[in-house]
Image (tube, rainbow, N blue to C red; front, side, top):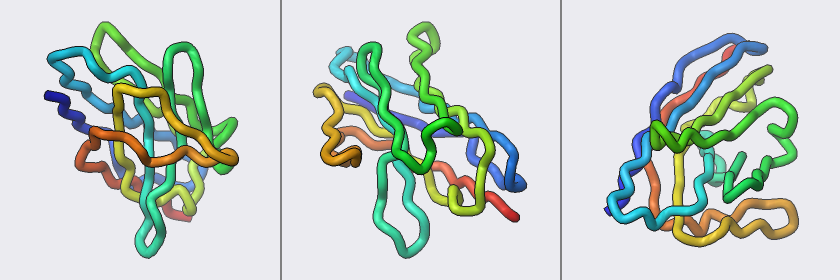
Length: 125
């Protein structure tokens, strides 16, 4: 049984920073890849970052501003978001899977088995 719980979503001004955390409950240790997705109102859900082994993925829209990391001691995956823009406003979701992440043409596919409930991030100008 795998459960994911996001936290850290808030309302911030443009240019500000937020740190999202995903608490991972994985009693059988099946998950090996974790990712952050986001969905803005009226838009499709899209992947922003992923971590697998020692490798990371970032969508071009967040590269250089977001940093995904894993804290094995705390069983969390964190997404540090800097230089936030109004277009970063969305509900952010944590995802996990027992397989490596799939990236096609620079886009992280949402083929993850486990999902959290989401946390809202609002960036005002």
